[in-house]
Image 1: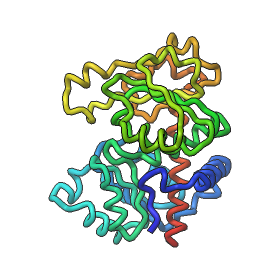
Image 2: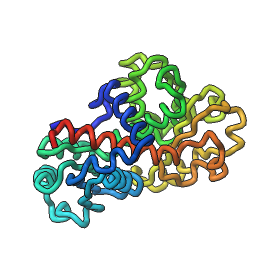
Image 3: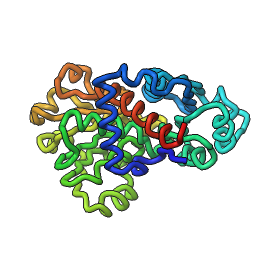
Length: 306
């Protein structure tokens, strides 16, 4: 049974196909309005989410399907101690496809092994968030027209940010990509990502704590929030949470065609004064996420013969 747990589960050719379908949905949504008629998506979210859960649900509804939703672990049998494996087997009896978010790394993989229907990883701990990466890739493609030969700046929490890890994996497969990693010492990209993804693929990168010094180099600036829920120590969170705040002043030396991205939710790391800047793409990302999830649902259901 085909599932999506890691962005690398999709070849670059399959990503191109998903982008093509998403672009077709954007151009002619009515063509797809009954594509999932009679199908049910189960959204199993065991940690808080607004955009991702609603995006999946909106995607399924706009394809003409229906949604069964668990919006917190406390409202499911997980609160009684039911295993992820048993949950997956149970939900397979009710739905045609599952989108799962879970605080434990690997939980969606366990679900995929035990489910008899496709499982989509909607975020597992600090590990992976492949459908956010699909949203990011559609945004980059629509803004830049390509994935090759881009300098991508990643700023903020690069240690726990699962969206960052997934985007690095995805973009490392394209020619001429270079990363600029902007973070405090405590929140650097994990060594396993640098070793297993960047070094293994020969991808050039630099690490810096100074956002403004590298701003003129960037084609894309991907901001992230410093995530309180990933810290064990409140003092560390409070000390680091305001490390990088993007303001109009910090964009003075940026390229006129810079694309500013953010997986959201935003706390205060991008000033609201940036929202009207034509380079701001983060709300476009939200919409693009819905279209890519529509394309992904169609692909996985078709491959499952459902």
